[in-house]
Amino acid sequence: MVCPVRSSEPRAPSASVVHVLRTTVHEVRNVRFSPAHRRTRPAAASAPRGRRSIGEPSKPTSFWHFDCDRTLLVTLMSRPKALYVASAALPLVPGLASIAAVIEPGHWSGITLPMVRTVTPDALLYSAACLVVGAPLAGVAVASRRSPVFEIVAQLVTATAIFCAASAALTALRLGGEEGTLAFVATSHAVLASAALALASLGALLGTLLRDPLDAAAIGVGTALTAAYGVLVAGAPVGDLSAAWLETALLASPLMTVATAAHVDLVRSDIWYQISPLAHLRLDYPAWTTACGSYLLAGCAGFFAIMWCRTNRGPDRGHGL
Image (cartoon, rainbow, N blue to C red; front, side, top):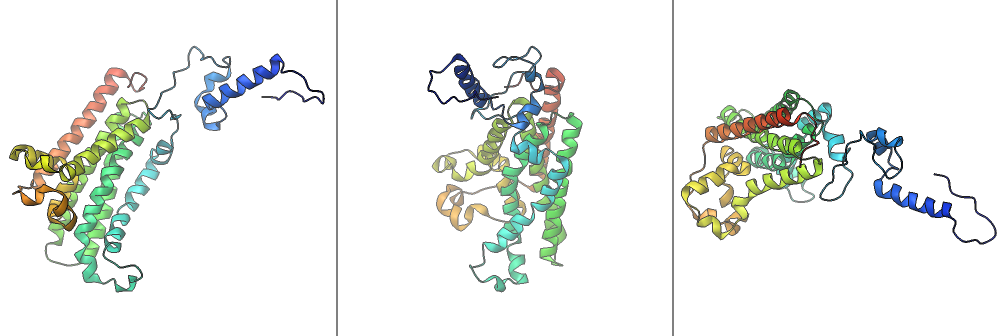
């Protein structure tokens, strides 16, 4: 775009100046100055300005009106190596957070091995909280690449295995040679892995159904947070639920099932005892085998739904929502 030559004599705006202004506004509104955008729309270079060429796909529209062909979410997490590195490093965050939560500021020298062992179940609880957000995002990011279904499943299963292996190693290292360590690590991480796989399949399904990754990520994380914390923050209506519905709500919460597998009575902790009426009810927590089976079934259903969508609509999500 070349600006008209300025003259020393004042003059009225000519037709060329008006054309330049209109072109500038049109360019800014369509975000064509971005190099990434030029790469994603090669067909638009030969088409007249303001018109879409015949073979060019229509632009997906997000609820927030972002240009989401190459979002930061997809760029950072859709590459397998970056996803695997993040999965291996993520268990360090809840491990450090569990220690920092019981240490007063400026007293890091007071960290002892018995204290680290005591807060190990809390680290698993923090890991579940991280997965509630991270697993749907990973599923959306992998599905946004529009890879074959087998590749999507392989990447998500591999990332889940890496995360749980790193978390299990850190948990066993923190507990040392205490009696029952192997059984505790095995049962708690079986629930953690199955919950992560179910949440990742939810994100991948939404990433397949929706055109825009940001929309899929928002719905996926919102659904996961509702399932995880809804039974805790719903308040008085929870006390009016029947026993069957209450057990279903507890089973649907990854936070509650992981806490149960880690032998943490979450509803009777200091915070939730004052907020949630669950602490004053007789609860039958789901067994870890029931939780694993339910989450694995949900994860397989999600992957089969992705396969059905790809089979009936093709690998391109052009007809998505």
